[in-house]
Image 1 (cartoon, helix red, strand yellow):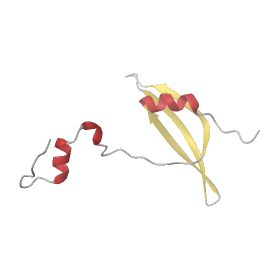
Image 2 (tube, one colour):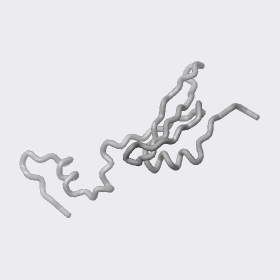
Image 3 (cartoon, one colour):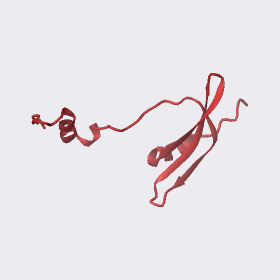
Image 4 (cartoon, helix red, strand yellow):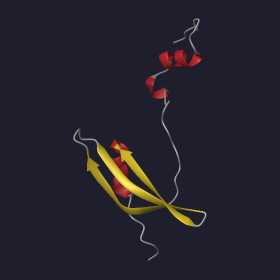
Length: 91
């Protein structure tokens, strides 16, 4: 669908109106956090039935350990719960 810009309308507004819903990922954040799972991941469900996974990732910055709290929701939580385990060091 093609649409011309009217006075006072920004290009972003036109894109938001005409782009398919899947093409709009405004507001989604992606990042890469490399570290070890610190603690046991805990899968729970909200009252509405949505899956929530809480876990911590330990990283090392300038020789000091730092711990990052991570929360995954819905399908991501279910998939991560299947494969995440705590790192206990080398065997």
